Each structure stands twice: as structure tokens, then as C-alpha cells.
Length: 281
Ligand code: C5P
Image (tube, rainbow, N blue to C red; front, side, top):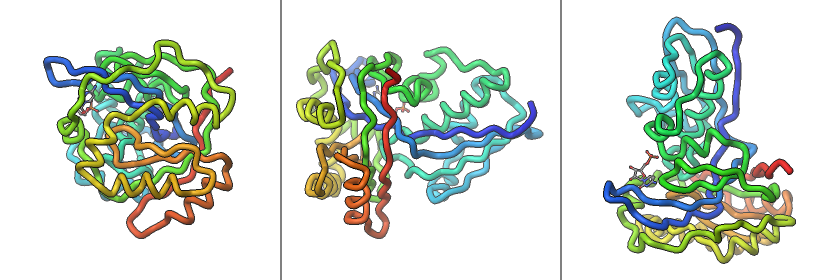
């Protein structure tokens, strides 16, 4: 190895998250339209005498308590033994934005450039159900099965987003456990493609995040956040991403997203205006 390389680990946003069934082992079948944002964590890889991970950035303290970071587990999974990672952790942890999976996918992509091919889909799933879709980042994708099915989606426009997290972590297993209805309808088999952001937001109104009701039952502040987002001028749609607690608003313009960011800023809250990346046409 030689030199220092850097990658952005973008936030993963589930524009929809339909829970369509549950397997005997307890895992859930999903149907989700996923996009990735320009903003995210930053990961640097340099030569090292062994495997190491330095944490920096505003969300680093929350991660430092974890015994085994997913970045290191991913590196071990591909047999890398001499890699010094620095993770600038900007996205809150356990927040529904796939941060750990996105960081691990960024690590695997950097290591692939150094001659360590990424694991197959089963190997990725052993690291986490969001790993396969994060390997496809930043392409908008449809995620199916337990997370192992990933297909590119054409016709997804760029979106001005505002991401808001109440500053409290939410446990993914706890949210799935609190789910009452596990056999909800999937998205339409054929996704239509959308001319612009308002058309996509309009279509999304008929879709769902099935984890929103159980997450809101566990953390009622999510309902307040969604109401606050919807009340902002130019907000076309507000929804929770993943298992929460981060909520996103889709805004008509960059200015509207930034105005809403100022209006919703509060101590302890994470508020980030950003843009999602479109399908390559
Ligand atoms: O794979 P990952 O570690 O991200 O999954 C976290 C938790 O989310 C699992 O332990 C499980 O409770 C839940 N999950 C699920 N069905 C999926 C993916 C995750 O029930 N398809």
C-alpha cells in the first residue's frame, strides 16, 4: 500500500421503507427506495503497521464506546492487516441513516483500490443488512429481501433535503420488535420514474415508512419533528428514514431547506440541509 486515500460515506435515506413480511428467524422482508446524500462521514485510509481506527468529528464520542467498529470488522472480513483508518464521524449514530454501514462500505471501496476485493453479498450481509445497498452508493437503489436485493432505480431526481435528528439514539431491533403489522403491501412492481422533485414527492405520499408508527410510539418526539418539518414553507414531504429517529423533509428549493434548517435549529438537535444524488441518466 502507499499514499493516503479518502472517501465520503454518505447518509442513506429511505424515501420509502415497506415491511412486507417476516421470516421464521425473525428478520423482516423489506421493499425500500434508497437515496444517498452529498453530506456524510469522511473516511481516510493510510498505510499502518496494523489495523487501526482513529475517530474525529462531532459524533465521535458516541462511537468511541463501541468495542468493535464496523469499519474494522469490514477490513478484517477482506483480510486487510495493515490499514490505518481515520473516520470523521459527522452523522449521529443509531439514527436511521445507515452511518455504520455506509462507513464500512466506504472502507471496503477504499480497500478494493488496494487489492482487497469486497466480500460477496452473503459476506456483506454478515456485516449488516444495509451493506449491499451502501456498496451501490451513491446510486439511487431499490432494496428488497432482507437487504441483499439491490437494483438501480432510473429517473430519481436530485432532492433538496433537510435531515433532523432529535439527538437521541433509537435501537433498530427495538423498533422492529414494536412493529404491529408485518405483512404490508410492497411498492408497485414497476417504479414510474419522476420528472422532478415535486413529482417524486407527490408519488411518495402514497408510499410509507412502516417503521414510523412503532418508532414514534417508542419516541413520541419523532411525531413532533415530522409536524415541525411539514409546517415549514416549501416542504413537499416529511418522513422518517430507516428505523429512525432521523426525519427528512423534501424541499422545493435549496433556500427553503436552509430557511427550515435555521427555523428548526435547537440545542441537542442535529439539523443538516443537504442534497441527494440523482440517478445517472
Ligand atoms: O443487519 P443489521 O445489523 O443492520 O440489523 C439490525 C437489526 O435490524 C437486526 O438485528 C434485526 O433486529 C433488524 N432487521 C430485521 N430485518 C432486516 C434487517 C434488520 O429485522 N431485514
